Picture (cartoon, rainbow, N blue to C red):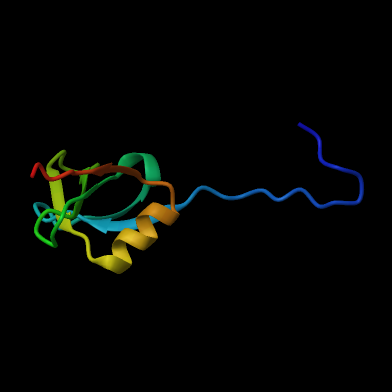
Length: 85
């Protein structure tokens, strides 16, 4: 796809998130595609998860409002949990 003459083409670099494994304590960067955000009705049911690239552990961490904002703004896949009333 070509841009319009005289209009700069905006390219966005992939977003990387810094994360740490709770099992092996490794620190690394992950792309948005490597993370999953789950948004529930409470703090307890709102979290993000990923697989540690170093040890392969499934990692789950709580996600407060700021983390949710950063992850959704960075293109992380989001699963919204709906309560059944």
